[in-house]
Length: 292
Image 1: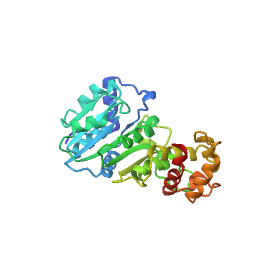
Image 2: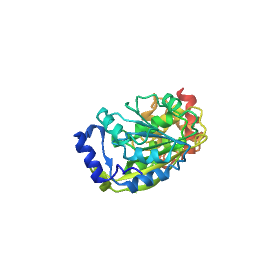
Image 3: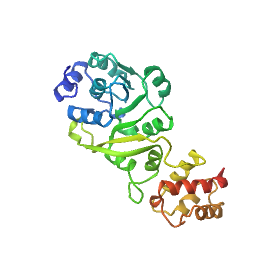
Image 4: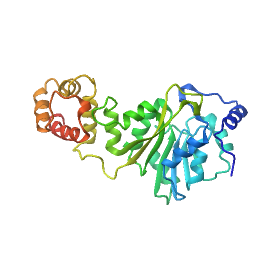
């Protein structure tokens, strides 16, 4: 068994050897607690036949744990300075591939086809850079990738929003967008002290299990997301006010909006945060003919 990368002393030694300095702009925080890393991987339920996709492997601390428990690991790393470090730290694991690309610009689907031939169980497992967490998660879900789900470390506040239920102050268009595609649960809370440098916020690991079918059937996905976004534009405003001010020509179409609300059996005076995903689906389908 090779020595773990994720100990404070080994992390420091690797960083010193390469004269590596953290780039704030890339949101780099490296994990230095092997126990936490193992628990993150536990939540992914990998087998020796699984493939794992990682985003932002850093110096390979999580990558190594994934490599020990899967058939193949594919990692996307944006920071070129880390490539020689990863080449060294991951040299014991020939079944790891690193792609030096921004995952937001990458063609992940094609990379999966190329790297995971014959592998049917694929999970994304990552300690995500906090400044781009939401766009990364949404891209992975919207690209309809052949993955079983996502286990990722992110800001606790974002994890709370993703797994929030209707009627709570965390619940919003992000909760609905993610829960439309997946079942979301917060798996564990992670203290700041297990990172270098220490972030200013608490972290959480969230587990997203992809649904076989979306949570609700809607006539237009893009319009459904438009309606949910509009409904939360100003949280204190009623649905009617948000929809009239946010939807195209909403003010002129106020009567249509009112009749759609009635058709969907939703009170115009309610606020977005009180609606379930099913109610949003009914509402967006009722609104669609007036806005297409």
